[in-house]
Length: 447
Image (cartoon, rainbow, N blue to C red):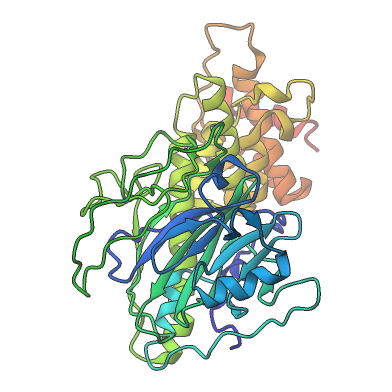
């Protein structure tokens, strides 16, 4: 069926995103009643593929391709066997072509949205059956490309049931996905809006993961089926420091019954989206917009925490520099005052390039923010400390250097004519002769 999930990325008034852009957030599925999973679909030949490459939604496990008494089965004979015996439902075929394989032959793209957003569209009626993608003499049916990070797909399983699959991240070893499986045979998913957590990047394994022994069988009530996860999530374990990667796992894991106290995101920020509205129109329009606004707010808050950090290590400096660049790209007016106070923060990696926008990331970010950035720079000029630093060997810490950077922000945003007017006005208003002299010096020659 045609996509009804609004393309959230089209709402971002930012610079164009690169073709490879992992999703910023994923859902905490720990409290979802339907069978679900969070795992890496491994590429053949990787350590992650040691225990199988094809996912079966019904048991949440990765399965290896069947053989004929130990002998490989011809590739074009394999689909019939997989379908007839319901061995597996989904595989990641080719990283270069961004191709996944719905083994049933049926898959439809629903657009850029979360699993819960897609589920909200089935409040009144289930999805139509996914499209059948026909094959040919050399390609099986069900090959879909290109898959895009952040988008959700409706997949028919080989048992005739359905799953929603969201692409989180493409990595060199496989495809990080989240899915929700509907075992009752309809394409209707009962799933409220979920808490959002930061995506932790996949780290390739350096050796095959040990095979996890099967857990003892236990009867699960329909309302609380056994969780099906193939990858530890932020909701099921205490999170590491910001930026710390996670190892990809292929063996199913069972999360604890309750999320940990600091579950949510790398920075400890958590979001809970409003539930879908009562009618189908609202269910289509409102959740994606709410999601976008919540994502943007959380991204800014997270990066402002990094901006406030001391950044005493190379890794910390890299994180802080990237956070400042992101705040500029997000046009985060709420961060402008903090950026103006840290305008002399130096990116030590760029010292060979003396352009201020290269060596001072806060300078470049304020210019990208625009008018709020120029206003923050003027405000910082009014209140900045004019006392010379104790260490005069570092020119970047002198009041004059800081003032020149702030004035350059105003000139770049407002233009020379307006900047000169603003600086003349500030010079006329200040009772402090030292500050007046500073404004006049920034003007250059006053007519």
